[in-house]
Length: 154
Image (cartoon, rainbow, N blue to C red):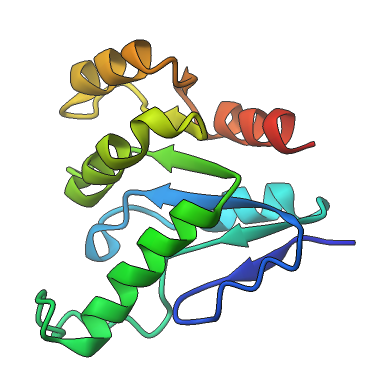
């Protein structure tokens, strides 16, 4: 069986399969599509990959609980992380990734995170301290993150 990819607003039907949520830098296209690289590398596995990068994202959506499209996106991401077996985070050095920082804190005590934070990320020190404190595996490159995902889910 091959990996199945779910993106918002698709229902979170995990069908009893192992799952990984791809949290990390997007920032309106500042970050490259690192999720595609991870998905390609994991495509041979029997798992569900939860990818929040939305093909039909519209930057004109008001970032408010009162905008139903924006709220749907944020609620999908939170629910997907709550349900995922693993949350894989990537902090691209060319981004600030404030939502990923929020998610790191939100799920730090969950025991189901792995983090990739290359040199050059503006708050690398904060990430190192949080990961050390909560015993979250921390790696420097996407290939290492992919290996962590494989070892944790296979």
